[in-house]
Length: 163
Image 1 (cartoon, helix red, strand yellow):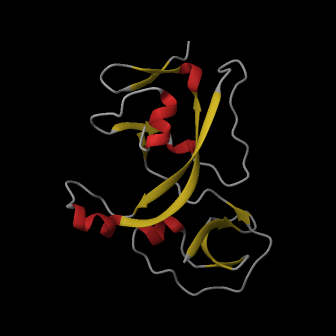
Image 2 (cartoon, rainbow, N blue to C red):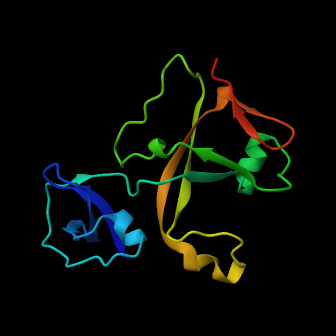
């Protein structure tokens, strides 16, 4: 099922089910659905909705150098342990919203299309066979990086020079 987050007439966001190209609002927001609330009744299709970011995350955790082509193009050895980093939750924007970077900040903007996994339940030390029980859904995102400001250090930590 395809679920979107929309706003109608400037009121609180709600979830919507996508049926073909049509958006059918639900009674709950995506955050409530993730928390386990019932969706409520599906409303008639609307065409004047504002599409919002798919979720308002509490945190964004990313894994760097997570596929062979990217490792090869970076010229680095494959990491021995996952290269984990965070992004600000406010970096998540809706489809079509411009990504704004100060021109003075960088001369080399890089982007990658990534699969984003939306975790729906708190997870800690989860067995591999139980991992998907914690997944609410998936979406696609653009991971945008100022490559000329990024510095990789020996321990596998990624830092950014901002000065």
